[in-house]
Image (cartoon, rainbow, N blue to C red):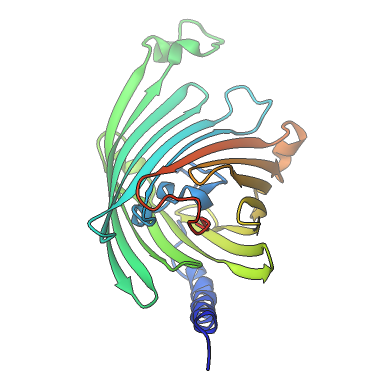
Length: 311
């Protein structure tokens, strides 16, 4: 008689086969130039890429992430992200708040967004449909520019500010050891320069496999598409040791090889680090990019005996 584990493995393999069939089709549609913020530790910060992720754990989850991209470059991008999400009404709904501060050169952008997800049971897992709404504040510190012509009238006024409202959606399905999702974090925008916002289509999936006693493996992928640029593919492989230490590596097409680590210090506290080894010509001038993540989970469902956090 087949065990529950065998049944779960059969279902998981069916999902994987379906994803492998769907993945090539992503290249047959219209291509979508990179505009949304990019981080490497999205695997444990899913709210950034999919509003349907909100409430996917029975406890409240929070994280603080900082990314310094292209070290040694003056004015290179830096990104800080604060995310908090939790489940409501017996896990039938989820809500999350996402705050993001991104700076590149003279320009800074601050986003605040609220995410709402409606969750329902589907087979052995849950399917969620999420909506995202927020405000983006973009500012240019023109007085900080080094000018060859100090009298240039285009730089005569400081702190040019624009504000826009942004909306997105996503669908997210997950079981205990499997997840997949599709999302457009910024589908449309209202306000100045809203017409320049390009929707990013994101498709992602991952599965956790028992490799041996005390070792779990998690292969995953993310496909990113934006109009005017080729599709970008992330391939990742993580290993979980003794349900506490994650070690992983990833490859981002045309961009970087990524090394990642996360430690579950206590049932509530986790700390992560990622380093991008740049593959483009920028590698001749930069040692890569660094990310630090601190996560804290709290509320119901937190205990010393809880299942490890896979996603």
